[in-house]
Length: 453
Ligand code: ADP
Image (cartoon, rainbow, N blue to C red; front, top):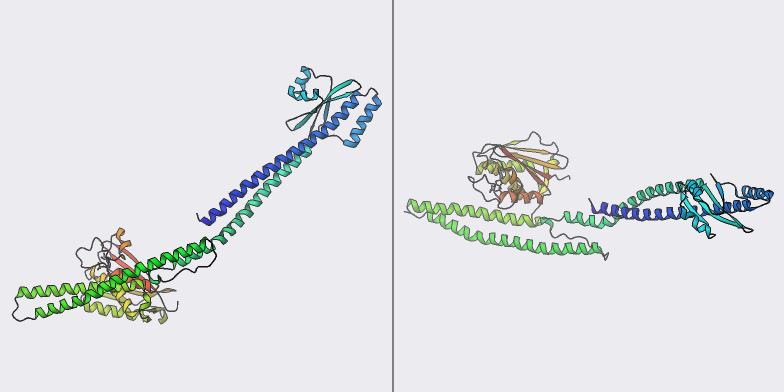
């Protein structure tokens, strides 16, 4: 889950907790207050009923009742029981109220009890040395209705608040993470070819600024290490070149010495061939080091891919005359622009030669097809052979320098050609894809953005 969503959810859960606690508090406080006010209203009526019962003059009794009805009105299910003196056990049992309920009333304190939605009060009313106990009960239907409304209101309020909190939480976290997303976008755009690029550091004096600076520091260190490694490979390859040329020249000279035995000639020839291979290897390593780091050093021009493939085929014919490379022009786009890329001719030629020559080599010169086509963004070159293929679990490694698949023992090679090709394609903002089946063949597909794009 994205941190952004996590924050929105935590924010919502926290707010939900606070709102629930607040709602519970409001609900119980309101319920307490409504119950107290209802008990109070019941007590007032109970008191009037008690005083009416203690009137000896019956006409006064009815006046009491009259005043009660006229000014206070009846409560729902209002009932009064007048008990002369202390309630006996039989009465208590009939009323089904706990004994402790009557106790405060004996000390002239009104007692309250709530059971099954019904409120009960018991009051001791005294007058002229006589007293009665009045047990009154009523149902607070209005209060219950109020509490029900309050409950619904709190529930609806809770859900609406949650929707708002989640939406604002998301917007808020989205806003907070904007600079982080910008950093991710920028960092994604930095690779071996543009290691000199840096993140834009905005002086916000916060963690994002610190993160950008840390990234830039790390890139500084990476760039230095990368440059050192490349310089080392370039320098070493350069240094090897001269002695290798001298050795191959000497070997050539040695072969032409008159009167040399066949064995000695053979020996000079072997030296010459091996030195040639070493020269090829050092040249490839030099190219790999150069393309791997800074593509800007190269010269860029408009390159027609169909013409380039034709020149690759010509080169293949010279190196391996028995090759069966065929170019498929059937899907060639009509628009020339879709065949033209901005790039370095020599490097692109080296890249496609590597793939085509590999296809010939690893298929023992079986037919190889090179198909050129284009989509809306790329000119696509598919090179398909019927060779030994690449084992499934090794496909992911073929662009790693010096890697050679496990089924290549009988073929010569160093594992430098494809990493170089890959670097060249990436330098041109393109991509390469490999599909292969052992014993059936391999297809390399390269995508290079054409010049319109
Ligand atoms: P190499 O000098 O070994 O050919 P590359 O860098 O050109 O080095 O290729 C790397 C590895 O990729 C090869 O060793 C081989 O295992 C595999 N490979 C490349 N092209 C093909 C192909 N057309 N068919 C089968 N395997 C291939």
